[in-house]
Amino acid sequence: MKAECKQNLEQISGLLEKLTIKQYNYKSKFLSGATIGQHIRHILEFYICIREAMDSKLTAINYDKRKRDNSIEQDPKTALAAVGHVVRFLEGEKFSGEASLVTNFSLLENCECVIPSSFLRELVYCLEHSIHHQALIKISLLDQGLVHLVDSDFGVAPSTTKSRLAKADK
Image 1 (tube, rainbow, N blue to C red):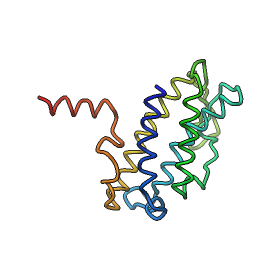
Image 2: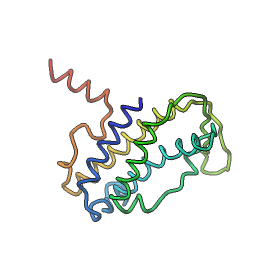
Image 3: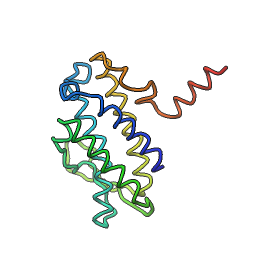
Image 4: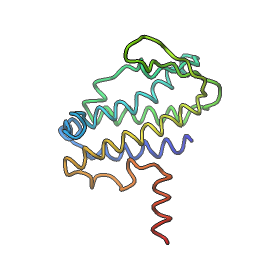
């Protein structure tokens, strides 16, 4: 699973190397004014939450309490460095052991839920979450006329890519 996450993060790195600050901060009308930078920050901070829990020897992971680092959101070079930190973290860790997802899904109440999980399951979630946000990033790239900067499978689940290839081979 670490290899798959790294492969996905390499797709993000490849895009970050090509984007200008203006393109990275473009507010797409198709994404309610969200920027590529906001989506990249959001992706990376989920991985960072796992790293911080593991570094602190904690088993609770709370994505709701992520830091929301504006420097990652606003500067593609800072984001690229953050991707590098996440990749190095992935290379050095063993994702074994139980974990708990702590979250609050209510808009009206402050009611935290604690859901049994594992560090490996949360790593899988980070990958799925990243692919979803890459699909949104692709919308911004289309809006800016920049979709040529990414491969056709950017933001597409591997199972979907494999299914499309199998159908094309028939």
